[in-house]
Amino acid sequence: MKKYFLLIICSFFLLTQVKAGGPWPQKKGKGYIKISEWWLIYKQHYTSSGKIDPNISSGIFNTAIYAEYGFTDRLTGVIYAPLLSRNYINNQRSSTTNEIINKGDAVNAFGDIDLSIKYGLTKPGSKIPISATLTFGIPSGKKSAGEQGRLQTGDGEFNQMLQIDAGSGFKLGKKINSYVSGYIGFNHRTQEFSEEFRFGLEYGLGFLDNKLWLAAKLNGIESFKNGATAADNNSTSIFANNSEFISYTLETSYYITKKWGISASYASAFRGEIIAAAPSYSVGVFFDFSK
Image (cartoon, rainbow, N blue to C red; front, side, top):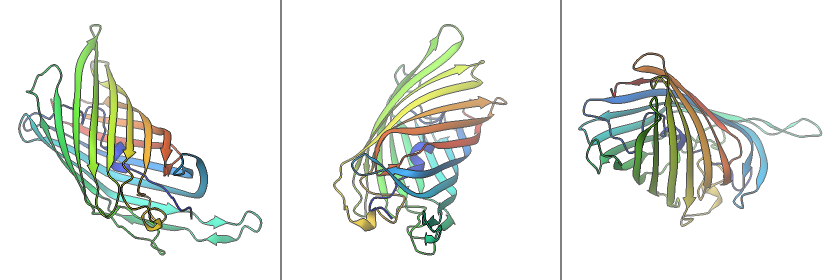
Protein backbone atom coordinates (compact mmCIF):
# COMPACT_ATOMS: atom_id res chain seq x y z
CA MET A 1 0.00 0.00 0.00
CA LYS A 2 1.15 3.58 -0.59
CA LYS A 3 2.21 5.61 2.42
CA TYR A 4 -0.45 8.11 1.49
CA PHE A 5 -3.63 6.41 0.33
CA LEU A 6 -6.91 8.16 -0.41
CA LEU A 7 -9.38 10.64 0.93
CA ILE A 8 -12.99 10.43 -0.24
CA ILE A 9 -15.04 13.21 1.27
CA CYS A 10 -18.47 11.76 0.63
CA SER A 11 -20.49 14.28 2.81
CA PHE A 12 -18.75 17.23 1.04
CA PHE A 13 -20.16 16.36 -2.38
CA LEU A 14 -23.51 15.09 -1.08
CA LEU A 15 -24.27 18.08 1.10
CA THR A 16 -24.20 20.54 -1.82
CA GLN A 17 -27.46 19.85 -3.67
CA VAL A 18 -29.37 21.69 -6.36
CA LYS A 19 -32.35 23.49 -4.78
CA ALA A 20 -31.01 22.79 -1.27
CA GLY A 21 -28.24 24.21 0.84
CA GLY A 22 -26.80 27.66 0.16
CA PRO A 23 -27.65 30.79 2.19
CA TRP A 24 -31.42 30.19 2.10
CA PRO A 25 -32.93 28.67 5.28
CA GLN A 26 -36.15 26.73 4.86
CA LYS A 27 -39.41 28.39 5.86
CA LYS A 28 -41.03 27.21 9.08
CA GLY A 29 -42.51 23.72 8.60
CA LYS A 30 -41.03 23.38 5.10
CA GLY A 31 -38.16 21.25 3.91
CA TYR A 32 -36.37 19.01 1.46
CA ILE A 33 -35.49 15.27 1.53
CA LYS A 34 -33.22 13.40 -0.85
CA ILE A 35 -32.10 9.78 -1.10
CA SER A 36 -29.07 9.34 -3.33
CA GLU A 37 -26.42 6.90 -4.47
CA TRP A 38 -22.86 8.23 -4.77
CA TRP A 39 -19.92 6.23 -6.07
CA LEU A 40 -16.26 6.49 -6.97
CA ILE A 41 -14.04 3.85 -8.59
CA TYR A 42 -10.33 4.60 -8.88
CA LYS A 43 -7.02 3.08 -9.97
CA GLN A 44 -4.82 6.09 -9.24
CA HIS A 45 -4.47 8.90 -6.71
CA TYR A 46 -2.84 12.26 -6.09
CA THR A 47 0.21 12.02 -3.81
CA SER A 48 1.17 14.53 -1.11
CA SER A 49 3.16 16.44 -3.76
CA GLY A 50 0.20 16.62 -6.18
CA LYS A 51 1.51 14.01 -8.60
CA ILE A 52 -0.57 11.05 -9.80
CA ASP A 53 0.45 7.51 -8.83
CA PRO A 54 -1.29 4.15 -9.49
CA ASN A 55 -2.91 2.12 -6.71
CA ILE A 56 -4.87 -1.11 -6.31
CA SER A 57 -8.27 -0.83 -8.01
CA SER A 58 -10.71 0.29 -5.31
CA GLY A 59 -14.13 1.82 -4.91
CA ILE A 60 -16.73 3.19 -2.57
CA PHE A 61 -20.54 3.36 -2.85
CA ASN A 62 -22.69 5.42 -0.49
CA THR A 63 -26.46 5.17 -0.16
CA ALA A 64 -27.40 8.27 1.82
CA ILE A 65 -30.27 10.44 2.97
CA TYR A 66 -30.06 14.23 3.11
CA ALA A 67 -32.79 16.36 4.68
CA GLU A 68 -33.53 19.99 5.62
CA TYR A 69 -36.37 21.19 7.85
CA GLY A 70 -37.30 24.72 8.88
CA PHE A 71 -37.86 25.08 12.65
CA THR A 72 -38.47 28.81 12.09
CA ASP A 73 -38.16 31.05 9.05
CA ARG A 74 -34.51 31.66 9.99
CA LEU A 75 -33.47 28.41 11.70
CA THR A 76 -33.10 25.19 9.69
CA GLY A 77 -31.96 21.74 10.78
CA VAL A 78 -29.93 19.63 8.33
CA ILE A 79 -28.90 15.97 8.44
CA TYR A 80 -26.76 13.85 6.15
CA ALA A 81 -26.61 10.13 6.93
CA PRO A 82 -24.93 7.39 4.83
CA LEU A 83 -27.31 4.52 5.52
CA LEU A 84 -25.05 2.05 3.72
CA SER A 85 -21.41 2.59 2.81
CA ARG A 86 -19.60 -0.08 0.79
CA ASN A 87 -15.83 0.21 0.48
CA TYR A 88 -13.69 -2.37 -1.29
CA ILE A 89 -10.17 -3.09 -2.51
CA ASN A 90 -9.64 -5.57 -5.35
CA ASN A 91 -7.00 -8.29 -5.39
CA GLN A 92 -3.52 -7.15 -6.35
CA ARG A 93 -1.99 -9.60 -8.84
CA SER A 94 1.51 -10.07 -10.18
CA SER A 95 1.93 -8.69 -13.71
CA THR A 96 4.09 -11.68 -14.65
CA THR A 97 2.56 -14.70 -12.89
CA ASN A 98 -0.98 -13.36 -12.25
CA GLU A 99 -0.70 -14.65 -8.69
CA ILE A 100 -2.43 -12.73 -5.91
CA ILE A 101 0.10 -10.54 -4.08
CA ASN A 102 -2.38 -8.80 -1.79
CA LYS A 103 -5.85 -10.20 -1.17
CA GLY A 104 -8.82 -7.91 -1.73
CA ASP A 105 -11.19 -6.82 1.00
CA ALA A 106 -14.63 -5.25 1.43
CA VAL A 107 -16.89 -3.77 4.10
CA ASN A 108 -20.58 -2.78 4.21
CA ALA A 109 -21.54 -0.55 7.14
CA PHE A 110 -23.13 2.69 8.33
CA GLY A 111 -21.17 5.88 7.62
CA ASP A 112 -20.41 9.08 9.53
CA ILE A 113 -23.41 11.35 10.16
CA ASP A 114 -23.36 15.15 9.72
CA LEU A 115 -25.80 17.19 11.84
CA SER A 116 -26.14 20.90 11.05
CA ILE A 117 -27.97 23.99 12.21
CA LYS A 118 -28.31 26.85 9.72
CA TYR A 119 -29.30 30.34 10.87
CA GLY A 120 -30.26 33.23 8.59
CA LEU A 121 -28.16 36.25 9.55
CA THR A 122 -30.30 38.44 7.30
CA LYS A 123 -34.09 38.68 7.35
CA PRO A 124 -36.14 36.44 5.03
CA GLY A 125 -36.59 38.10 1.65
CA SER A 126 -33.27 39.98 1.73
CA LYS A 127 -31.74 40.70 -1.67
CA ILE A 128 -28.43 39.22 -0.56
CA PRO A 129 -29.19 36.55 2.06
CA ILE A 130 -26.39 35.54 4.41
CA SER A 131 -26.49 32.53 6.71
CA ALA A 132 -24.23 30.75 9.21
CA THR A 133 -24.13 26.96 9.54
CA LEU A 134 -22.64 24.91 12.35
CA THR A 135 -22.02 21.26 11.45
CA PHE A 136 -21.14 18.43 13.80
CA GLY A 137 -19.48 15.38 12.24
CA ILE A 138 -20.54 12.33 14.25
CA PRO A 139 -18.10 9.37 14.11
CA SER A 140 -20.84 6.77 13.57
CA GLY A 141 -18.99 4.84 10.86
CA LYS A 142 -16.42 2.09 11.25
CA LYS A 143 -12.85 3.28 11.83
CA SER A 144 -11.28 -0.11 11.09
CA ALA A 145 -13.05 -2.89 9.18
CA GLY A 146 -12.50 -5.76 6.79
CA GLU A 147 -10.45 -8.90 7.31
CA GLN A 148 -7.22 -6.92 7.67
CA GLY A 149 -8.70 -3.76 9.18
CA ARG A 150 -7.67 -1.70 6.15
CA LEU A 151 -11.12 -0.32 5.32
CA GLN A 152 -13.27 2.37 6.91
CA THR A 153 -16.72 3.93 6.56
CA GLY A 154 -15.78 6.74 8.96
CA ASP A 155 -12.69 8.56 10.17
CA GLY A 156 -13.26 8.03 13.90
CA GLU A 157 -13.05 11.73 14.78
CA PHE A 158 -15.65 14.27 15.96
CA ASN A 159 -15.33 17.47 13.93
CA GLN A 160 -17.08 20.82 14.08
CA MET A 161 -17.36 23.16 11.09
CA LEU A 162 -18.54 26.78 10.97
CA GLN A 163 -19.60 27.97 7.52
CA ILE A 164 -20.81 31.33 6.16
CA ASP A 165 -22.94 31.39 2.98
CA ALA A 166 -24.07 34.34 0.87
CA GLY A 167 -25.93 34.53 -2.41
CA SER A 168 -28.62 36.07 -4.53
CA GLY A 169 -31.41 35.02 -6.88
CA PHE A 170 -32.28 36.90 -10.07
CA LYS A 171 -33.88 36.54 -13.52
CA LEU A 172 -32.22 36.22 -16.91
CA GLY A 173 -34.73 37.72 -19.28
CA LYS A 174 -38.37 37.05 -18.45
CA LYS A 175 -38.47 33.25 -18.06
CA ILE A 176 -35.14 31.99 -16.71
CA ASN A 177 -34.58 32.08 -12.97
CA SER A 178 -30.99 32.07 -11.82
CA TYR A 179 -28.96 32.18 -8.61
CA VAL A 180 -25.38 32.51 -7.44
CA SER A 181 -23.97 31.64 -4.03
CA GLY A 182 -20.67 31.14 -2.27
CA TYR A 183 -19.34 30.02 1.08
CA ILE A 184 -16.26 29.88 3.27
CA GLY A 185 -15.81 27.59 6.25
CA PHE A 186 -13.42 26.43 8.96
CA ASN A 187 -13.43 22.75 9.95
CA HIS A 188 -12.00 21.88 13.37
CA ARG A 189 -10.99 18.21 13.56
CA THR A 190 -9.94 15.99 16.46
CA GLN A 191 -7.84 12.80 16.86
CA GLU A 192 -4.74 14.55 15.45
CA PHE A 193 -6.38 15.37 12.10
CA SER A 194 -5.50 18.75 10.59
CA GLU A 195 -7.90 21.69 10.56
CA GLU A 196 -9.27 22.70 7.17
CA PHE A 197 -10.31 25.84 5.28
CA ARG A 198 -13.22 25.19 2.92
CA PHE A 199 -14.68 27.34 0.15
CA GLY A 200 -17.03 27.13 -2.80
CA LEU A 201 -19.03 28.90 -5.49
CA GLU A 202 -22.24 27.81 -7.21
CA TYR A 203 -24.25 29.09 -10.16
CA GLY A 204 -27.65 27.71 -11.15
CA LEU A 205 -30.25 28.17 -13.87
CA GLY A 206 -33.93 27.19 -13.89
CA PHE A 207 -35.76 26.22 -17.09
CA LEU A 208 -39.23 24.99 -18.08
CA ASP A 209 -40.99 26.99 -15.36
CA ASN A 210 -38.38 25.83 -12.82
CA LYS A 211 -38.92 22.14 -13.54
CA LEU A 212 -35.34 21.74 -14.79
CA TRP A 213 -32.39 23.10 -12.83
CA LEU A 214 -28.76 23.08 -13.95
CA ALA A 215 -25.89 23.98 -11.61
CA ALA A 216 -22.12 24.31 -11.81
CA LYS A 217 -20.08 24.28 -8.60
CA LEU A 218 -16.50 24.90 -7.56
CA ASN A 219 -15.43 23.45 -4.21
CA GLY A 220 -12.13 23.41 -2.39
CA ILE A 221 -10.41 22.24 0.79
CA GLU A 222 -7.05 23.53 1.99
CA SER A 223 -5.44 21.76 4.94
CA PHE A 224 -3.64 23.68 7.70
CA LYS A 225 -1.41 20.59 7.96
CA ASN A 226 -1.20 21.04 11.71
CA GLY A 227 -2.16 17.47 12.63
CA ALA A 228 -0.31 14.18 12.80
CA THR A 229 1.36 12.87 9.65
CA ALA A 230 2.02 9.34 10.93
CA ALA A 231 1.39 6.49 8.51
CA ASP A 232 -1.47 5.11 10.60
CA ASN A 233 -3.45 8.28 9.83
CA ASN A 234 -2.94 7.88 6.09
CA SER A 235 -2.10 4.41 4.84
CA THR A 236 -5.01 2.31 6.10
CA SER A 237 -7.87 4.76 5.69
CA ILE A 238 -9.91 6.24 2.86
CA PHE A 239 -10.32 9.27 5.14
CA ALA A 240 -6.70 10.40 5.03
CA ASN A 241 -5.21 13.33 6.90
CA ASN A 242 -3.73 16.53 5.41
CA SER A 243 -5.71 16.23 2.16
CA GLU A 244 -6.48 19.05 -0.27
CA PHE A 245 -8.34 19.54 -3.55
CA ILE A 246 -10.11 21.96 -5.86
CA SER A 247 -12.98 20.31 -7.71
CA TYR A 248 -15.86 21.09 -10.01
CA THR A 249 -19.35 19.57 -10.01
CA LEU A 250 -22.02 19.58 -12.72
CA GLU A 251 -25.49 18.77 -11.45
CA THR A 252 -29.00 18.62 -12.86
CA SER A 253 -32.33 18.33 -11.09
CA TYR A 254 -35.72 17.70 -12.73
CA TYR A 255 -39.16 17.98 -11.08
CA ILE A 256 -41.40 15.17 -12.32
CA THR A 257 -44.26 16.59 -10.24
CA LYS A 258 -44.54 19.76 -8.20
CA LYS A 259 -42.64 18.18 -5.29
CA TRP A 260 -41.04 14.95 -6.50
CA GLY A 261 -37.97 14.90 -8.71
CA ILE A 262 -34.72 13.23 -9.74
CA SER A 263 -31.15 14.48 -9.89
CA ALA A 264 -27.72 13.46 -11.17
CA SER A 265 -24.22 14.87 -10.78
CA TYR A 266 -20.64 14.48 -11.96
CA ALA A 267 -17.62 15.72 -9.99
CA SER A 268 -13.88 15.73 -10.58
CA ALA A 269 -10.78 17.50 -9.26
CA PHE A 270 -8.60 20.13 -10.96
CA ARG A 271 -5.82 19.43 -8.48
CA GLY A 272 -5.36 17.41 -5.32
CA GLU A 273 -3.14 16.04 -2.60
CA ILE A 274 -3.84 12.63 -1.05
CA ILE A 275 -7.14 12.16 -2.90
CA ALA A 276 -8.43 9.76 -5.52
CA ALA A 277 -7.63 10.82 -9.09
CA ALA A 278 -10.96 9.79 -10.60
CA PRO A 279 -14.42 11.34 -11.08
CA SER A 280 -17.38 10.63 -8.80
CA TYR A 281 -21.04 10.24 -9.76
CA SER A 282 -24.36 10.59 -7.99
CA VAL A 283 -28.04 9.94 -8.74
CA GLY A 284 -30.96 10.62 -6.45
CA VAL A 285 -34.68 11.03 -5.83
CA PHE A 286 -35.94 14.01 -3.85
CA PHE A 287 -39.13 15.32 -2.23
CA ASP A 288 -39.24 19.12 -2.06
CA PHE A 289 -41.94 20.49 0.28
CA SER A 290 -40.37 23.93 0.57
CA LYS A 291 -43.08 25.58 -1.53
